Length: 448
Image (cartoon, rainbow, N blue to C red; front, side, top):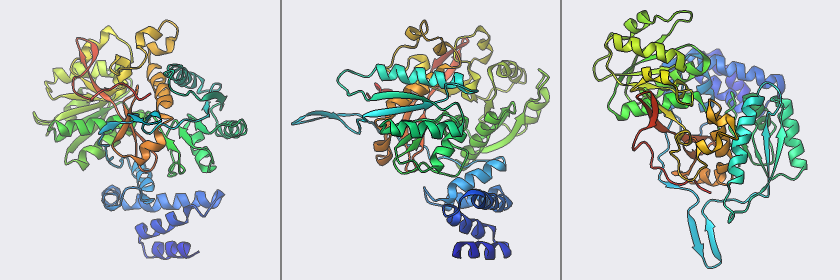
C-alpha cells in the first residue's frame, strides 16, 4: 500500500521516474489484471521520459537493478535499446581437477534426468525439431567417462499452456532439470509460474521477469549481432557509422542494439536507413547516408542475403570504401555463388558452421543423415547442441564470472541475472565464401 501511495503521489507531481520506481516495487506483489495495469503504467511513465533520460538513468543503476528490464522495454518501444556489458572471458569451464579419489571436471553438475521441452507439433515444429536434433547429437556424443543423464523429450505444441503442461508432466516423471521451452511466450509463462525445478530456457521472454533463482535463459538474439558489431567497430577505431536495415522486427532489434552499444562507446550513428520494399534501387538511401561518413567510418547492415546482394554493389558504385559489418542473417548458412557480391563483408556467426570449434561433430559428416544441418536450420541445430553442452555448467557459470563453455554457437557465459551471453566468431566473405577470420576467438575444445 505504501508503494502505491508513493507511486500516485509522485505521478501527481509529474515525477515519472519516482512513480515508475514505486510501481516496480509493487510488481511482484500484484497478480492478474492488476499486475498488467501496473506494467502498462510503468511503461507509460518511462516512455514519457524519452531516450536520453532513460539512457542516463540506466548508466547510473547497478547491475541487476530491477529497473533495468523495464528501462530496456521502454527504450525498445522508443526505437532504442540498453547497451550491454560484454563478458570478459578468461578460462573455460570443465578443467580436469585430479584429487586423491580420482578426477573431476570443475563446474560439472551431474543431473539424473533431463526433460527437454520443445514444440514438436504446431507452427514452431520445424524449429523445435532442429533444436532437438542438435541436442540429441551432442547428448549421444558425450564421452563415455562422463555420466549421461536419462533424457525425456516433451512436446509443448508451441503454446504457453502446452509448455506448462509439459513441465508438470516432466516434474511428475522425476526430472531434476528442464531444458526449454523454445517460444518466448512459453518461457515467460513458465518463469511466471515460479518453477521449483532448475530451468535452462531456450529463449529470452519479452518481459521484465528475470529467470528464477537457479535457472537461466539462452537464446539466439538478433540484438546480439548489433551489439557485437558495434563493439568490433569501436575496437578497430571506427567512431562514426551508418546503418541499413530492410525493416523486419529482428533487423530493427539489431539496429537498435548496434546504436545503443556504439553510442555508449563514444561512437556516432549518423543515420539509420530503411531500404524500401518493392524496388531494387537503393540510390536514395545510400545518398542520404553519405554526408558526414568519413574515410574512417563504418557501415552496419541488418538485411537478408537477397537484399545484401543488391545493396553491396550499389554501395561500391557510390564509392563508399568504408568497412561493412553485418548481422548473421546476411549469410544463408551454406555456400552460394551469388555471395561473391558480398566480398569483404564481416559478420558474427556460430563457429560450428565452419568447423572452427574443435571437439564437436564435423558438420559435413552429419549432412547425409541430418539435412537440417545443411541450410538455415544449421544455427538452430548448433543452438540445440549448446543447450546440451551448457546444461551441466550453467549454474556454476553464473557464480564464476569470466568462465565459459566453448560451444557450437560461440563461447557461452552466464551473467549474474541468469542470462546466457554468447560470444561468436567473426566471419568474412572472400571470393564468395564465408571464411572465419583469424584471431577472433581463442578456440579450445568444448567442455564435455
